[in-house]
Image (cartoon, rainbow over all chains, first blue to last red; front, side, top):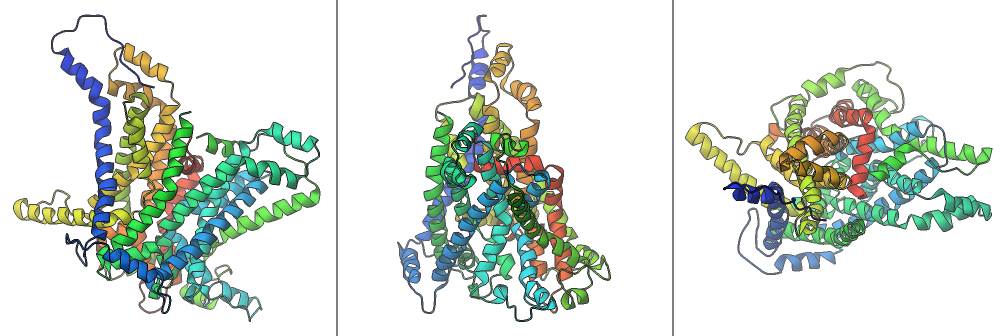
Length: 314
Length: 315
């Protein structure tokens, strides 16, 4: 809806028109700096990165266009499996980490939300416990999990002390398994958030529907399976999209859990981009991977935000 | 905000009655998971209170025998961080504070004004403007860091020239200033989103009444909206504080050496691979790095959850 200033009946003194005009444009003038910043530093910079991906930039940004060379490179590397290229490793790890992170967070989040919603005592104590990891930085989370999973002093050592000496758990120092440790730490950090989203969804369900199901003799399991979970489809979608976009953006966690990603074993597109741009002096390739990350996120976020905004203004 | 309020209000509808066995299973699972979520924090705290030989020789789940705050003292004032001259993380802690305070205040205030304009002074195209600002919240920062590095490098050279000319850099090239700029810009989307959704529900009649009384744009904002905005200010400030304090990517890219924020210093402490890994010092440093945001969470958990929900589910 638009608000228009009601015309004032008194005759206007000379010079007031300029002031009125200013008043009329003032709101837009107030918003303009922020919008300009976003236009330049988000959209302009995205275009700049896109431009760089078509250049031959090495250690410094260059303006010499070389067409799709960097894209061709990445495309070739996508299929370079023996020995695996960094980009191939990054994509495989993205699939492994992203898949585990999203699916386990969803399952755990929904499970905890359903359990918490059984009118239990002590919800006020339990809920904050599931949520506190979200207040931590990924670097802190990674530091903690690096210790917990360290075979020399962490979980493996503790289990050995308790008498199970054949217990073996060295994933965090095993290049092939490192990415799973990143997933464990990520799930620990984020699943509480998904729990909160589902809990909000559950609390929003009309009690009458559930009562009706109960009267019809539906078991608790059937009620959840047939009624509750289908009603919560929009929450699933929101959680799925938020988690996927977080998985693609994960960066700090890889560095902190693995200890600066030794040998690129836990490479993800985000770390690939950083190392190619700032340490391997192949800025054009780095930009290309950034463009691919941006495109993947745009592909999932734009339709989501569009539908959210539309729904709101019904 | 309704989503978060729904959780915080607790269950409203009649629950299904459970048998004793079911109840035991429910509580058992909930407590088990609570333990899993708590273990890393407990182990961190216990490890930080042990002497090093007890960490490397003992069980990580065992309580400290010889309780010591030595690791905390070392982490705060003595630990070596990368190749830096400065000892301990205390300097970096203050770097983070100096960065967070202005960045949070500026981005929150701008967000409030933007939200006010986008709901109460709508103009043609307001939806597109908001949509574009909203998408800015979700971009991967990898797609902006190269141009940002180029621009900040340019500002740094400008600062050096200014020093040659006048003796002062006027903040150009200063890491803290750089990070404040970056965090304000990339935080605007979220702060605008929070205030827009909050002011959307604010009765427009009150604004209209104030307008008829002759109140100006800023008078209405100051006298009508601001007094009613305390909750959303708390939510936004907490959200921005947590995000900016916990940022690593920007901090590690745009701040140099001694001027780095806390997260970058922590990562350097943990990964400085000279000699024995002092896990107790690492954990003390990690707890110090986590303390401000954890404290905010403990003191204002409600508002923290609201912010989280508002950043994901709109409306």
